[in-house]
Amino acid sequence: MNINFDLNDLQAFRAVVENQGFRRAAESIRITQSALSRRIEKLESALGVKLFERTTRKVSLTNVGRAFLPQVERLLDDLDLALLSIGDGGANRRGTLTVACVPSAAYYFLPHAIRSFHGQYPLMKIRLIDVSANEVSAAVAAGEADFGVSFTGNLAPEIEFSPLLEEHYVVACRRDHPLATLDAVTWAQACEHDCITLDKSSGNRLVLDRALSGLQPGKHSVCEARHVTTVLGLVEAGLGIAVVPSIAMPISAHPILAKVRLVEPEVVRQMGVLKRRGRTLTPAALALEQRIRALPGTLTRD
Image (cartoon, rainbow, N blue to C red; front, side):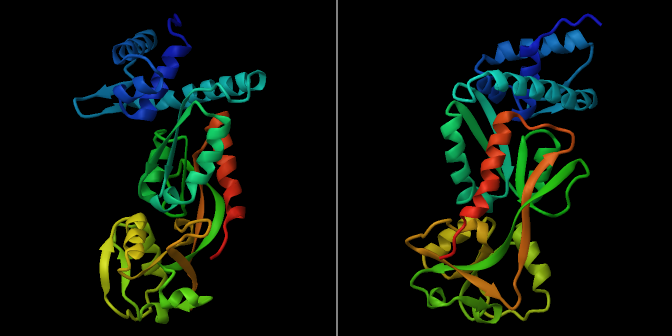
């Protein structure tokens, strides 16, 4: 085969995959969309295959493109590692790092790691895909995200799960709420108060429904929302209490919100990092993952 393509063409290919389209891919590697299209056409011509299916609405990999992607990622990742060993450690590194995560991790938990990461990689752009647990797994499996942060569940075979922390579900309430003064609250006590709940599309709702199948409900929910962040906003407004994973709560003291341990029964879930099997993280992605792994040690209780 006459290898008539270069590193820029391979980087363009990965950028289109990671950004799910040509416009955002061109922006991420700072070239025009027409220049990006020429690089992809050049690569496809050199290989003699079609790598992408393109419609007016979306861009997706062909079967050949999906098979080619892991090889490109491995080559570029190995090159990135080699350059890092002789480079400046990250201060001048550019690019986009994509992380898929459940919304409960995106609000209070991940920003601390991203802020620390930004200090070492100030020119790197972080793209957060904050979606449901199933969508996190799918984004990592498809190569749309460098890695994911989610909880255990029905993971695709090509996904490996690495534990991060075991977290408890807690009562979220205002600091002026009667429950805020307690060290722990039973589910029976919690059910006596107006409650804001997550709807059935939430992975957290599934975890809770399974754990509490034998518990008789107390008061009816006064409001139901899809995302934990929305629920916490309603709690702050004084509409009621809510049961949320502890990772969704502020790491340090909050002027309005308080969290109280839930018991009888305690409900826990395993949070972790999701990666695609066989893929080596880039130095930048590895640096962010390490910062995320350091976060559980900083978690404090109210």
